[in-house]
Image 1: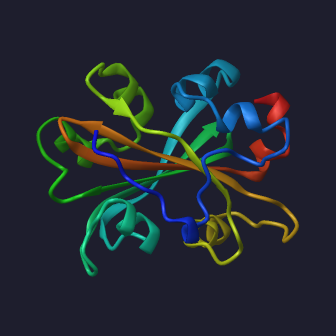
Image 2: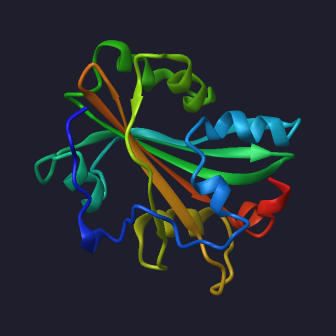
Length: 185
C-alpha cells in the first residue's frame, strides 16, 4: 500500500483523545461489524445512500483525487437492537472501483466489514481519529437523520483499505447511542 499522509489541517489524528469507555472501540483493528454482532443479537445494516458524488475535501485530498472528481459513496447505519449505533461512510474513486472492488456497488444491506475482513488480500492502513465539529460534513449528515444535542460529542475513525493497489476509504462515526453507552457496546 502506498504511503498516504493525512493533512494536519483536516483534524485527523493518529491517536484518539476520546474518553476511556469509547477508546477500545475506536482503536479496534478488527471488523467493527463483527464486534457489533457479538454485542447485539439483533444486528442489521440499513442503507442510507449510495451514488456517484463528490467526496468531501479531506477525502479527496487523502485519495489524491482532482477537484470536481466524483467517487462512489456508500452510507449505512449499523444497527443494534433496533437503534443506530454507527454511521459508516465509504468512498472509492472510479479508477479504484475495479476488479475485486467492483462488487462494492452492489453491497446493498450487506455489511462491508464482513467482505473486507474475509479477504486476506485486503490490507488495512492506519486508523485515524477525530472529534467531529458541528461544521464537519459527516456530522451534518448524521444530524439530518438523528436529532443530536449540541453538547454531545461524536467521534469518528477512518482508514484506507487496499486491494491490489486500489484504495477504499472507510469512515465510521460512533453515534450518541453508542458513544453514551460505550460500555454496553
